[in-house]
Image (tube, rainbow, N blue to C red; front, side, top):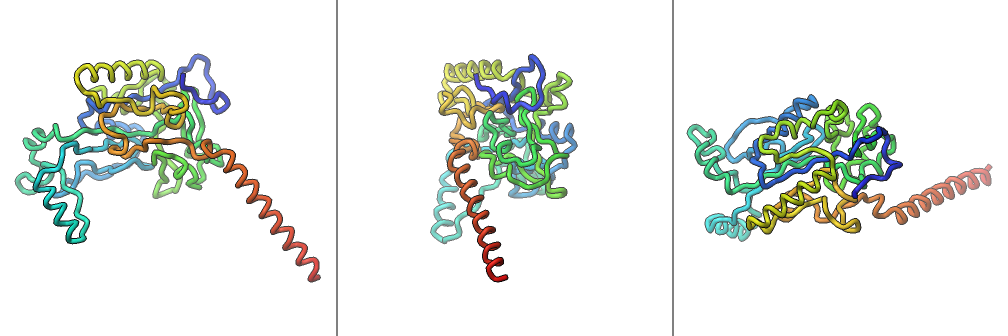
Length: 315
């Protein structure tokens, strides 16, 4: 059983099971209903929605302090011969090429969207709704100097905005690039797994809005069983590439000790912008980091003492 250290749990409630997300990318249709629901419930600003020729449907681009759910678009087809020739010519010219535009984007009359072509091209894409992983070994919590990041009774990682001082230490400590600072007030922001809804017995807004049940919420152990059976079902149907990312691993191989929000993928994790290996940098290098900190402190103290001695001798 994957569980966070008991001493990390800041909010206690008897009988509260670990809660989590299971995101099945094999049934995600890229509708972004989860993004909209997340922004609406948490009163987060929009990221723009203007369609232009050569632009992607993915306006959000990445997780940020104002985007706590992000649907990533992934083209899975091999490039056409025309694309190969264009790429070779661009490389030969030293220009490095350019990112291809999305199919059907800006190809309709008047520069709009060709809906019929977009529907026909759906098989070209797979989608992944990314979110904070609510790690068992959370690097952001390890790095936070103010206690703004806490572990709830559901073993989710919650960021208290009124305690955050905007230092930014949590940002490089997250191996998944989840945490970001708000551009207006400088404080960090990330998914709370709708902690306010959980306290009232409600499922998170993104899971509630998902029309295909690509995002499933529930007790963590139950989700792992459901996900494992889903992988087995896909294997029986011939999808041998399906696997779980962030759950079901041996303890010594678990990503960040095990992810509270884990995924079913059919492509290597790097295709989705996910690391193949991940852990809290502080927990992974705790002895060297401690020795370095102690050594730096002693060196600084020696420097201050030397300065005082030098000043005393001059007087």
